[in-house]
Length: 335
Image (cartoon, rainbow, N blue to C red; front, top):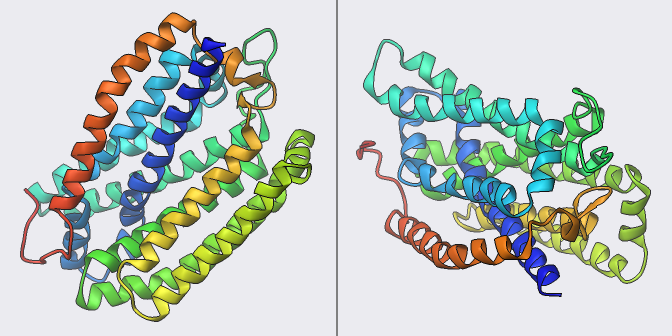
């Protein structure tokens, strides 16, 4: 009983880490996706300055989610990694190129356009591959004898491409609403204009993915439309509609914070929808949370350390955002 409880506690911790990564690094990646849509170098500088103090810390949550999966759900890790080698490797390469470009573009003039493209390209590859990996997980991973039994290209399907485009578009929306909140003047107005089509596209893609998901597996269809889970499946779209209304209303009224936080709410609600589809599986359609978990002793040992470190991570993350709150001064450089 204790082992069962620990495995579900850990599933909640990893899910929370992944969600925090998505909503924090999502707008960070979105800023990179919007780089080609700027008018001059000054705009690109101030866009990068808006995330410069926090982008490293945002990726802490990716390490926590991936490391936690390896430590406490080794069977799930052993199944997921062979199934998603290619998109995960490409995602990491995208993040590496993006991180290098972040540092190097400030130290050169001749090669600055190259690093600008690397920043955009790394953001695009990382965003798209995250969406591809999500779609591959949702559509299910073939398991036989507690090992991955699928092919090398099973992750590449029309559904996973759709989720890749959807996540990339959503991240661009987060980036546009973040810059609308943090910047002023011409660049703020430009990002607010860009947020409108991105908001509409994100909502359309959310609708398409939501309509397609129940038909990828009979288990999803039953969870979405059988009682009592149908109650939650009905509440989530209503909340999505409210968040969409708040976001569009905030853009119409030229609000600073409301569009960004409503866009974040869309991602949180989408994540909850995926959780409804997955539960109680760790790797759908056949590997449950309890089956994938490590021995009780390992779960407890790791939990003790996590309960010490997690408040520290949350504290310094919150402190960083508090210190760098408010609008960005265009005259301030990146140090």
